[in-house]
Image (cartoon, rainbow, N blue to C red; front, side):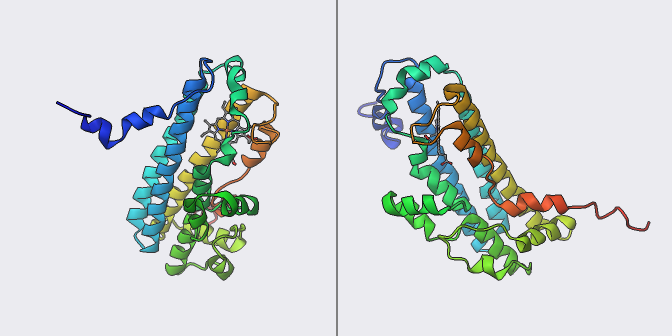
Length: 270
Ligand code: HEM
């Protein structure tokens, strides 16, 4: 075999390996850098699958949407597992190279922001920052309806009473929790045999939201383990800021309707 092997040229492995340039010789910085890069790439993998799910829903292709959501969930599992590698670093190792990060912080990741935007978390401050400084990909995302919007439109076409205000909201504006949407999920879960497809969609969406919250919760634990109560390099007060973010749930009504869910068999005369 002569020249560059196909494995190396196909995935441009040489260039890839040139991208790891630690700024210190502290043990731990290289793996911190690598895991940060792996996570950044995985954000894109998940975004891609969620985008496919959104497209499939737009074509009323429920099977295609659920397959894509299941793929996203697998990659989300890898994202969560990546934290384990980071936990091999002790706080003294981290503090020994933390200064080389300067003001670099995950809060500046446009890949992460794109992922949040696809799912439907588009608060004004992040939307404005993305429009001001973000690459084309994140700005374009704000012009599209989110995955949750696509799910609500799908349910509307299936005859469920999704409030018009949720269907007509401009895509760059944040979805606000709605009792009307909660009623729709309640109707589906009250009779899952009748609404098999929508129920399956809801379970797939919830799994995506659950895995995302798991990633956030583990990130918070890692942050407490590395920083205690120190502020973040991105200018926030660190763990307490992340604790607030942890309260957020994607597809909010899919979480809240459960409070009202009752066993339909109880109270029925035999
Ligand atoms: C020792 C490891 C880490 C520590 C101590 C840490 C700390 C923090 C802190 C304190 C914040 C709040 C913003 C700030 O002030 O900086 C933050 C945000 C963030 N971090 Fe990390 N982080 C770590 C590893 C990572 C890794 C490996 C990733 C993945 C690429 C990541 C992704 C993010 C993201 C996406 C945010 C923004 C969250 C949001 O806007 O909701 N972090 N991190």
